Length: 292
Ligand SMILES: NC(=O)c1ccc[n+]([C@@H]2O[C@H](COP(=O)([O-])OP(=O)(O)OC[C@H]3O[C@@H](n4cnc5c(N)ncnc54)[C@H](O)[C@@H]3O)[C@@H](O)[C@H]2O)c1
Image: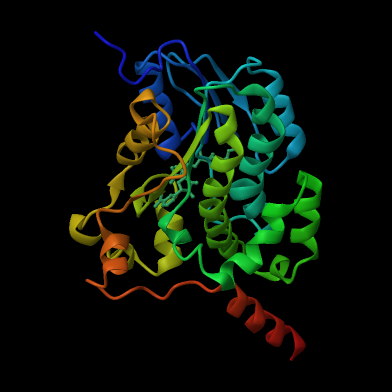
């Protein structure tokens, strides 16, 4: 049988492989014949993976130690891990959801990927509105940072550091959506493709935290459009496994919304647009409240 996906024997690095979408993707990759290096701070129990590497993505040193245990040449990177920010502060949330991916791609994968390599992230439809100037203005300084330490310094010095961790989630997802597009132009000369999947509400380890964030199960379901149910982890793993495969060889810089048409209907004006996040406005409000 022809290996259409082309994962046989390929070295794949999956973050967040202990649970939810990352776990589902890692399982699929094992079935497709890949050598899977599974990074997570929780133990990854998947039969057939090459290695589980205990990693804290909020720590640069932990990421460095993880990549010391991974072969020099990486074929595919799946940046899936993330936190909602309900249990972590703003800066830590952004380090996990954004800075870790930026660091891995710019300071590790540039040296370790070659022609035919692929990178894909799980970002979020929670990062819709990433193209709006009011949002860009706020996240660009972090994306333009030249190192982990510079990004951390910018975050620590920013008024945003006073925001609850749950604001770190949309901040990171807005930035990751832009970043996917900018990174594909950096990697294109190397023949490496970069894409992202933007999930709608999905039944994973994060479900309870999101339910709490949006104010109940009914509110969570209101973001599921015609599907009228949460997606399953597998339904996000499938598109990310596709995007990083040989089956998507002419797809790069794509933000693939997997939300059963929810965002598309908003863009088309078929349903009203939810209140889009404006980070500039949000920071102005925080500044005002701090001055009072
Ligand atoms: N569930 C949803 O509704 C939804 C919607 C849109 C986007 N997402 C995104 O999907 C991605 C996958 O999350 P999920 O929904 O499968 O949730 P999940 O909680 O089931 O999985 C997240 C994984 O990331 C790992 N992780 C968290 N912090 C880490 C750290 N510091 N170091 C190493 N590993 C860490 C966790 O241990 C866990 O295994 C996340 O980026 C999330 O933001 C989720």
